[in-house]
Amino acid sequence: MENIVIKRKSFTILEQIGERSFKAERNGKFFYVKKYEGDKEGFHQFLKSSHRFSITAINVPKLYYYDKNSYIVVLQYIEGDNIFDMLIEKDLPENIYEAIFYMNFLAKREKMALDYRPEFFKFDGKKLYYLPFAYLDYNGKDRFANEDIKLWFYTKDFINYLKEKNLPYDESRLGNEYAKNKEMALMAVKYYS
Image 1 (tube, rainbow, N blue to C red):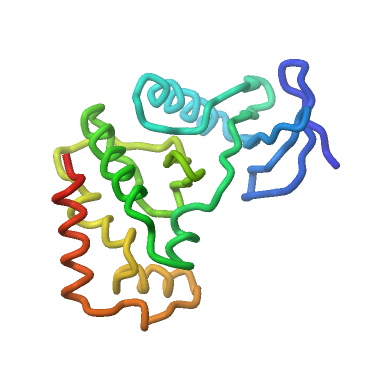
Image 2 (cartoon, helix red, strand yellow):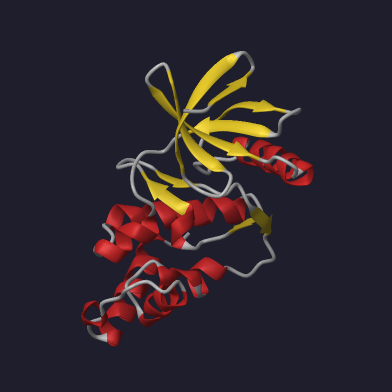
């Protein structure tokens, strides 16, 4: 197993998560490690975004360490499934909708537009976390409430999203389109700020 040393602390790589990201362990605790090797601009953009998120109430993984020479960051590892995988298995519980609408409210208040694709969010059983540390400046148009919310329910849009990713889907879960639209509208009325 590979070890990475940052700030004189050694992290053991346990598994690869993405192209340049890993699950690591140190003293019985898990961490998320991201390598920006050869991507100095991406590394500095991450640090800038991380600082911006740190002064908001939007839940993101905590940044523990970073190395300006090797372009490696060590973050809090969030246990649990991402929202995309959860929705593939079954409909989401209502507390997740409450959390995403609240996060949308916080982002708008901070003049930030998040990427609301469900694979970029993870629920640890208590909190919803936004993972990519990426945002755009909010332009006054609420994409989540008007468009992206359709990817947070098992809708035709979600099935098309699964098809784009060449993943299996279950059309029997669609149910009545009117009822699904009503459910989305009721959640929006209940939690939209």
